[in-house]
Amino acid sequence: MAKNMQPILKRSRALGISPGDMGYSKESKRNPGSQRRAKKSEYALQLKEKQKVKFVYGILEKQFHKYYEKAANQKGNTGDNMLVLIERRLDNVAYRLNFGKTRRMARQMVTHGHLLVNGKKVDIASYEIKAGDEITVREKSRDIPFFKALREEGAERMIPQWLELDAENLKGRVVALPTRADIDMPIEEHMIVEFYSR
Image (cartoon, rainbow, N blue to C red):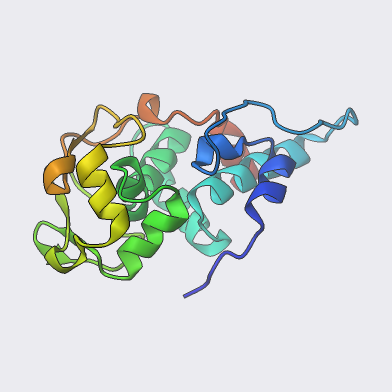
C-alpha cells in the first residue's frame, strides 16, 4: 500500500489550507502563510485545486483519478459526485465521527483493524460506506487511551448532520449519504473536472 509522506504543515501552507481545518491545530485561519502575487495560469490553478483535495483526504493520484472516472459515469454534476464519493470513504467517516484526531490517525485506526462496519472488521481505508451502515470500535480496542477519552469527554469536533455518534458506546451511524453542502472545505471542484477533461 502506498503511503503519503508529505510534510503536513509545509504542504498545507503551499496549498493555502489551514492546519486547523485538518485537525492539526486548534486555530483555524482560512488563508495561512503569505501568498505570492505572481499571476498563475489556468492550468496551475486547476492543478493546485486537485492537489489540495488529494492532500486533505490523503489520496494518491491513481486512486483519485478513479474517483473522477466513477463520478463522470454517474448522473448529475461530476465535481459534486466526486467529492461525495471521497467523503464516503471509511477513513473520512471515522474522522468525521471523531474516531481519529486527524484523517491520517483515522486511517491508521481503520488499517489496524480497530473499527467494525455492521459488526464486521474492515481494514480498508477506501471502503465506501452506505446509508444505514454502523461503525463501531472493536471490543478489544476500547481500552486504547484515545477511545477511553472519547467515551468520557465526548466528541471534540462537530458531527455532520448525515452522521450520528453515540460517544459513550463508541458507535456511529450513517443516517444519510453526504451531499455537496455537507463538505465544509472551500473546494472549487469544477476546476478539477476541467483539469481532467482537458
